[in-house]
Image (cartoon, rainbow, N blue to C red; front, side, top):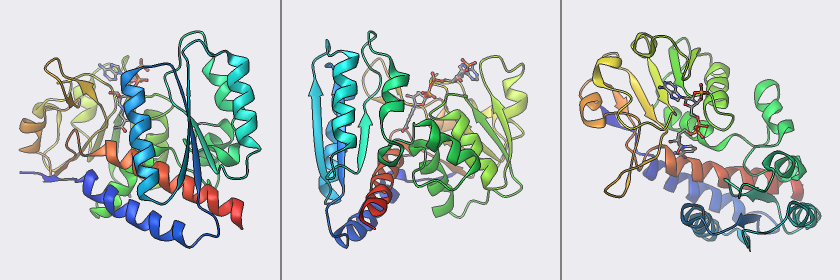
Length: 279
Ligand code: NAP
């Protein structure tokens, strides 16, 4: 039976470390969150971020705006927050209502206040530089691997999904850690053939039941990033957890695996940004 990678517990430890470091700064770190519209899932994420901030001694500035907010109004707000010295990090909760154009809004956030690491300058730094902030979900996965002493160097890592926020940066971080990385997506010819070769398998697709036990190598590490809403309520990942846990050496649960780590890395990012503003 696989060892469960307990993201919830590790995230708690990280929050405590972040709170300790934040307390040493001359000024409380501040995170501004912009929420447009009334999507219940987004509202819940924002509420959780507010709670996390309070636990770490951060100030949180919530901007809940009506669904009909215009692109210009949002750009104005981002500009104001960029110039506000009490704000160290800014994030725009996605997805946005359809009439809004996400790319220019994310580009308008000053790179030195980019809490989510979505600005192209920071995306570039994770590719080729020395970033201050990290892509939250992929870095959360790396923190989990590290905490459980799971080596990446020389291992065959297979990443399912190539989105800009998960799959692509995940592959990049595994490569930075000296993994040999295969990226798979919806056009991959034989998915099972690729996954069976994985020492470390990361699934970020969003299809419940996609990864069955016959697709996993004995003793592999299986990281399930997905959050699929179950018809009966609650969430599940891409991986058939019960069957795969019999075969894998390490596995993340859903919920309680990668999700809490994503939230914890956001706090680490805000702390890192605050340090650059207060030095
Ligand atoms: P996304 O933008 O929808 O990307 C999904 C990716 O899966 C695409 O690259 C797609 O390929 C690929 N794909 C689709 N069907 C496939 C198949 N049969 N085999 C292999 N690849 C396939 O999703 P995302 O934003 O990356 O999120 C992925 C999942 O992670 C979702 O369930 C989301 O809720 C979850 N998530 C969780 C966290 C967390 O903190 N736990 C954070 C972010 C996202 P193409 O590019 O070819 O279309």
